Image 1: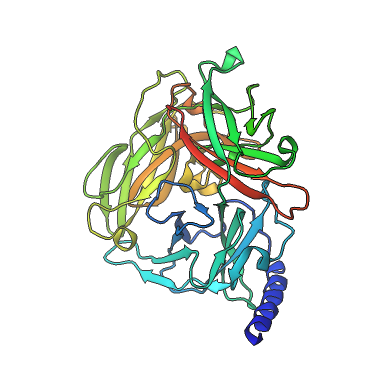
Image 2: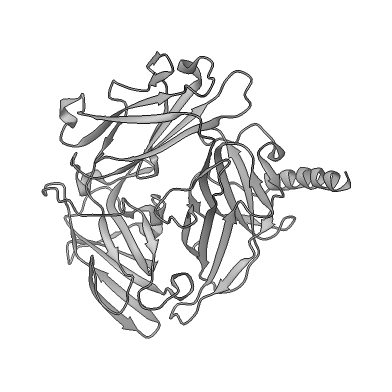
Length: 420
């Protein structure tokens, strides 16, 4: 009983202090420039999105490097969210078992690298905390301890699934004839035979992502037809995505030689400079079926054995040769969180008639696009083009909110390839 009272007291204190500790986005974002190579995925699956099942012996792992190369106090907090990534109106005790605001205590220095850094690892669930219900979650990492002037440095979305429904997919030709050569469309079918849903036509919501991009997600789709225990989510062309093209690759798993996507590798006094192949506008180019990682990246090191601690950082130089346009041009991929951050904005060089950019990347294999800023979102189509045969990976999430429910339950998840 005494331990329980302490837990409730700490819970109230931490919730109050948390609410006073600055603003952050309920999306994938890095708020400071000294943290790089943020990865969040299932343990052992670096190309998979951070999705876990409620009753499975499955863990997610967050890793990142601090380029200040010292030891800091980083703490973390979990927030349950609704289907639209707003905080759920429930208390932490309703969705977690354990203690919030614990420290990330797996800290290791880099070894034998030109660029020094400190590597941090957080595995969820762990001995301090575990989730107890399904739904959307936001992981917030703070610098500093609770009660001090701490501030958010990383936010990451993840999903916990309590699988109760089956999801089937049917690819179709776009209904709009102007999209036949450029878009990919699907119909979705949900079977809830083993789960009781009251009024599924009004209480079920579906979100579809392409290559795990939340910025282009199609959300809040509801069943169009209900026949028995089968829901038809769409047959009217709402689930339609520009197929774009295959991603451009960067292979810097070795810094001793050039590889795919790289033009030259130069060792300098304090590191390595990698110059990439000169890029071109691909909107008027034929589609080529080049294998890619659908915008994701993997940290690997072929020069030494330990990728996490002995993987070095390189200055990677991007060149896009094309006439100057009115819109800002950015480098974009999962390693940029698909965000229009200034560090990924390219500058135009009239002398070479090219856009130039420089990004510090850890050894590994990366995918990227060149995109333009339209409103507050990046669009790759004006530079990359779009072709319906492009291979893409899609993720489907099924939520339910029934009368009396206090939060959105995540009852179904499926991932499928466009070349099904």
